[in-house]
Amino acid sequence: MRHNDEWLAPLNFLDVIRLAQNFTVQQFLARENFGHRLETGSPIYLHEFFYPLMQGYDAVAQQTDVQVGGQDQLFNLMAGRQLMQKMGMPPQIVIAMGESLPGTDGIEKMSKSKGNHIPLLTTPLDMFGKVMSIPDAAMSLYFKLLLGMAPEALSTLEAEMQSGLRHPRDVKAGLAREILAIFQPESDPAAVQMEWERIFKEAGVPDDMPDFPMTDAMRVVDILALPG
Image (tube, one colour):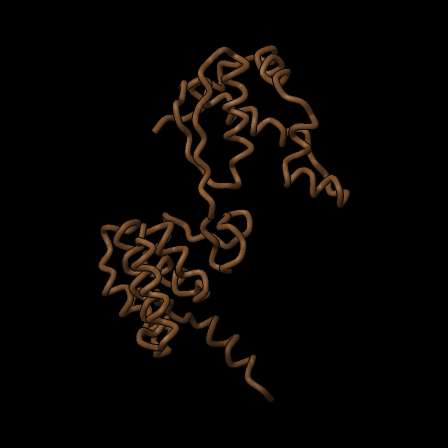
């Protein structure tokens, strides 16, 4: 893993201008996101044009042969290809994946800014619970994009759920355990599932719930709050 400030930080203002002269405003406004906002009168800030420029320069600095990204990154990936050609380099091959992982709402692409993401640094119990909150209709994409399930196996799984042979809740619990095993390898997925079910299915109390002793002052407030 490399941080792109390794090659972006040394750029001066003149360097940025020279990079920018390889693109037109029309190219950027043709991007679906910018075009829609232009039509609806939503603001488009100048600094937003810098991101494709920076990502394009990533390809130049690393002399990439191939870049892989989501369909939503296609414009930025192609910017890298164009910039490489303008600078006399062999243009990279772009591979854009057709689908993006939906968030916990099952509709929008997973995004921290949208509040529908599953944090990688959260607790195992929270991660398990957020996976369990995913709508049933979105599960297939999680199996496909996160776990790499083969199309044949995915079709079989979907057919078993539709026929009632397998309950979607149980399938989702299996998905949550596998995701925990990948992103929370120090956890015990089976134990996390038992704890989650005890709290949310059986209305139990978490094992790690903190205790707060009641002080005399708190007792007085509690008595004064009683009706009558």
